Image 1 (cartoon, helix red, strand yellow):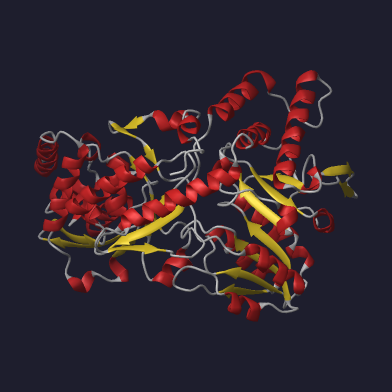
Image 2 (cartoon, rainbow over the protein chains, first blue to last red):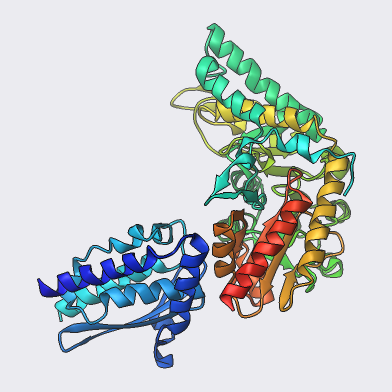
Length: 142
Length: 407
């Protein structure tokens, strides 16, 4: 599938971006910059209806199906969380829902961020990935 | 810093403190969550499973008898440390929360509709939820003593809440979030004056000061083993003998019985009445080892050292712009909680972690307290007597670096 290749390609791009960094602080500086640049969710979606409660940081996610592709926007009150959301959106945005539903987000562990997706971290990202996939599945069944 | 307290010598006994994480020397400032373990405790755990392992209180064989002797010797060591009158007053539990649940269920059985329980606004969830559950079950009323913005219990409000309806007051000795040391001795006296019992939550005090339950005159004192240099999964409920005798058993099963028939069961005497099933034998024995270790330390000196260290950390943090220390009680120890304006605690915690520093971020299981301060959480550095001023300096540098990146 073409789009699946797209997602794989984007993930490989992110992995090679991260290979440029020597240490953790550089990686995080990059993530934080991504967070600062993330196009914000429309304020009208920053309500309890769109919230994904993590233990520590809050995440808001809006998803819509536009011309057969998923369109995501999100925000978080923690900037690192926001940066990682930026990466997830870069990978999954404008992809067909069936591709997202069965996608393997291998880049997360490749760039060393798997700790953020462990349930113990409880920063809303586990819920975020799940919600992004569920929204894709939902739109397939509409 | 005081010279007589030899922190280097103490640090050497904690192998976990010697490691590097992400290529940096570990700075462990999450002692409020759990303490690291000294080599003697680690060795005792190994030895128990290597050569001592046996079930206790029932075997006629050598191993079982030795394990039983060691388990009961640990109880006596803890009794002596707390200055309890009898070893029967020391009940082994899973930890602080388990101990509180035991009292909430069992002492709760003696209470009646309309009776009142008092807690404070700085309690952690483990000292809130069991009482809410009890109140729902028995139709009791839960009252909460408010605190001031410094993070001190307002004593005048406590006085107002106390009445002959009050049956129990349950308050944290040292706040895990704010570091406030509560004036519990006076509070216990006041509770007794209206005929109420007092449960003192010692989860954050047992490792930081000398505890004397006879002097405090509390009716219950509870703590977790893992916060006092012992294993996880073991804790203690101290209770006055007459009170424990009057309380019905909490859980049923082996060890807590005297005689069982299908028609009627009679219960064992203290402390076994409250220890149903095979206990955490290794945990119980090795918690005794942790107290043996603690007996090699002058707790008055270590308390002074920790207060000085926390005070030093506060002074350093106060030099940061836009940094607010949460909890500024006059009597405070071992904990410094703070927020930096415009930055989420999670972000600071993540960047400190990558520089080798372990702190806790979030609500510290005290959501009502966070609501009081109208904040989502804090960054919390919590110290033990093995931490140093040099670590605080390094922490301050790492914090500055983190803030610069996040801004």
